[in-house]
Length: 109
Image (tube, rainbow, N blue to C red; front, side, top):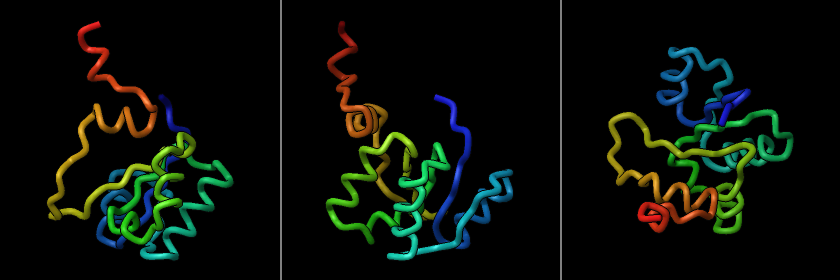
């Protein structure tokens, strides 16, 4: 999958790191303001990939979280703040959540 435009949204420490590696579309935003920005990204489809701080996920209600988790354009990926530990989502769980495909069942096929 090729991503035409990539956006990063979250805390200052997170987005500045991505700016340093060459991603130009970074947005310092948290809480409900960040949720509204992600909704805007989903409506205008300007970005193919949105990297968002894990803390924004906690600001979303269940229906919004379901909408974001099933979106393919843009694909929204939540990432933890640097130095913050969290259990990582497996590739199998990500494929099932985003694509609705259980790749564990395909391994033996």
